[in-house]
Length: 397
Picture 1: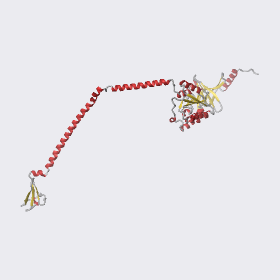
Picture 2 (picture 1 turned 90 degrees about the horizontal axis):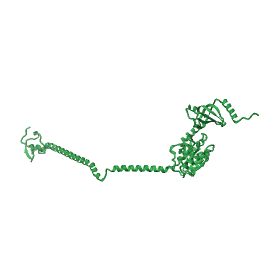
Picture 3 (picture 1 turned 135 degrees about the vertical axis):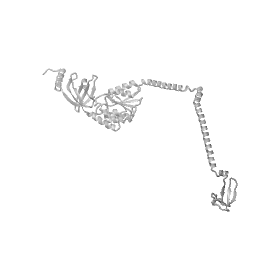
Picture 4 (picture 1 turned 60 degrees about the vertical axis):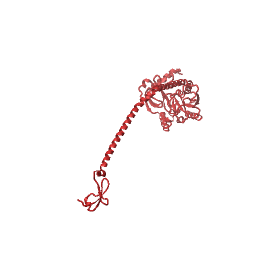
């Protein structure tokens, strides 16, 4: 029997065989669990329906990328296999990465997002305001997860009087979505809380899928109690983020959003009181400054200084009006006298005063022509005063 190998020796032989046999590989798969490291390297996994392999791209290669890799993207990578002896694992060291497609999960989520948005589940006008001082906060999450512990620690530090109800639910797996939706409906049915936090800690895109399930999204949108979605870390997202009344980047941030820091309340009240006092004092000082010129001794002088010019203008206007009426009356009087003179000049009596008379026959017809009378006719002569009867002895034409 051959001498046994040490673990290191076996691993070294595996490394040599793998790395020499697969010095250059081109693999296509869906990215998941993408996690940039503080060192600048990018760690992720590639998977399909039957298998998964770890991958890494070092920061010197990342500089040439024209896009940001995200969970759910379908990628095509080129590189070589490498064995990491301390852990006994192997992975692809990527030299090149390019987008091969949208990815099955992202395509599914995008299609579901468009459908639910068309139904109005994400409309902004349907969002409810969070209560500022809730008495009870409900949390739908795994009771053993880090998210619940973070929420409890934040609420305890910020406000000790708030009550927290944990509604346990699995946050990943096939049964998670139905249980999460049931817990949301349960809180609403029994009115167990004033505000509800639904979420979990970070994870891969597959881990967060229950919070993008259609049943969960509809339960969040239909909740009468305001819901804060707190799924994963800041870069993570789920469809319930869009149907919730508010999205928090992390569960800890959700706890801060639903609680008012009691330590800061007295300081806030004091600051608001000072601001209000300063505003009122400023307005009173300004009003006093405006009223100062209007004391009792000065009021009569100011009143007269305002009224006197107006009285002078009134007197001047009155005199001008009287003169205008007088001139107009004088003009009318002269015109009347002129018209009267013209009328009187055309009167028959004026002609009679100059010695003229009106001659009529016996029938009262005015005689204007000597041919209209004959010898023996009786005529009536009317001078200015009195009447004269005459008999025609002859007429000359």
